[in-house]
Image (cartoon, rainbow, N blue to C red; front, side, top):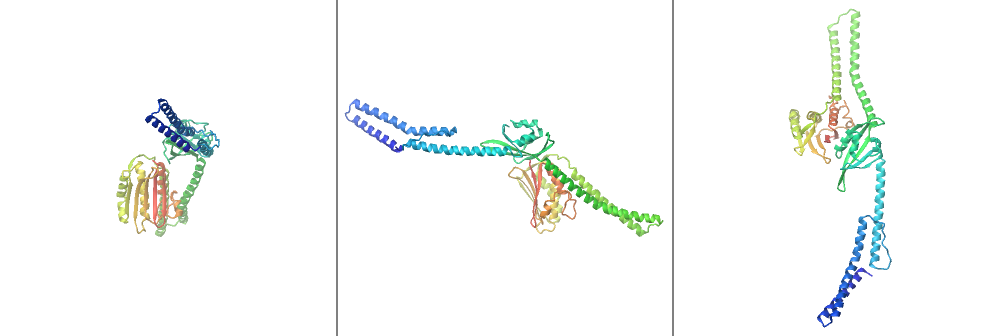
Length: 447
């Protein structure tokens, strides 16, 4: 029987009983009949309440089972067409769907957990209390441990690594050396902070890049040797050739007991002068190389970027006015503070601004934009943009290589030096350029 029909029938019956009770009270019915109808009405009210609450109790029980993840219970179905039967059919359908979804989620969880555990990169997740949730096989192998319960236990493996994991924020990375039974490992440590269900936790990746670094180091040494031999041979070859020519000429004169004529003396002086110039060029090259190889440790302090930009503008004012260059300064926020070495950061920006000035020599529109802001990841960014001719794509991949230059006059160490300074500040330098439109150098400070 339909629930609504049963409910309406009981209400109608109770209404009739109330009508007769009222009729009996107003008439001359006896006490017995009135009491009988009164008792009947009370019983009907009780049964009506029980009837209306029966379905709600079943729904409440059903919801309690869902709260407790009890999806295995089945509600009996008699197929007698009653409202209870219909309710049980719906309950069983919902439970079946929930059970299927739970099984699917569990399967996905186990799949991703398995993938997580067997990745070649070491991965660790831990909550705000430091309790480790997942520690995959690669992380155990890298740290040479069987199990870790709390992130603080990493301090026993390597204090520097533990400090980096605790201090790094989202997107932060650091290179850490740790001792391992297989030898020294160079780890790239990368951290992401996540918020899930109101709880904050960190995901840490550990990647051993020792072999890649050794390969890159060997490649760098080979490139450096090529550059050094090329530059040195370019200077030594003419010096050696000219010195040999002068020596032969003088030996011939001595053997024949001949004196040097004024013209011969002038030729010798010219040759000696050429040797001197080439020697000075070689000394200058070695000096540049020395400055590139010996960058002092940064002395960190607070740098007001607005004031720094003003100082740079005053410093380069004569050059800018002489070439008709407009310098634009953009800061957001205006009171932006950078933590770094004032002199080294100044050196980097002066080098980039000088490059920008030289890039604008043949440009019709001469604008340099010096901007500073905080990006979406919370990193401080400084950009130097010019409206020059741009840099060719082939040169873009080489401009940070020591002694590579696209200028007619230049040592080719300015950008290499800038890159090393930025690395000392735990930052990076990037470049993007479009031919005919201009170039932007981007300094990224991780904080």
